[in-house]
Image (cartoon, rainbow, N blue to C red; front, side, top):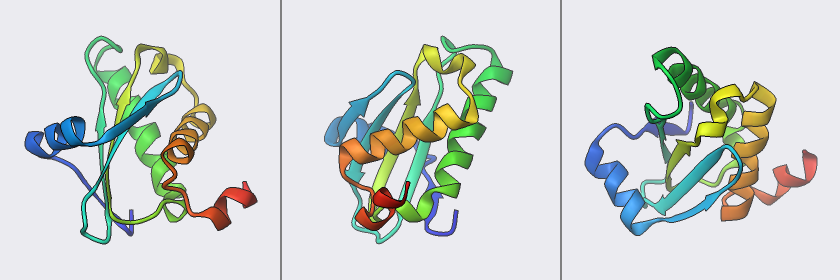
Amino acid sequence: MDFSESLKKNRDFQNVYKRGTSYANRYFVMYILENGLGKNRIGISVSKKVGNSVVRHRICRLVRESYRLQEGMFHSGWDIVIVARVRAKDVTYHQTESAVLHLGGLHRILVPDHVSES
């Protein structure tokens, strides 16, 4: 992730939840909040309701990788938190990538040039 860091602190997650905006689709909920840092910070949350640690870690890896490969499509300067829903338990990589880009489009944080190329 060249242009991004990870959100790690609970207060950062809580700040995005409280002050940010959210959109959801079948597999994920995405919260965003402008951070003014000139780079994105991404946090991924997968609750125990979704599955055991193997399942949760797999979802986390899929989301992180799909964001990393499409990172150039996102505008900079946002805190992004992606929360997995229970339906994400059996998600494939392509479904994950599509869901993350769909939510980015709903939030209007995708660079317009890249949207038309997809």
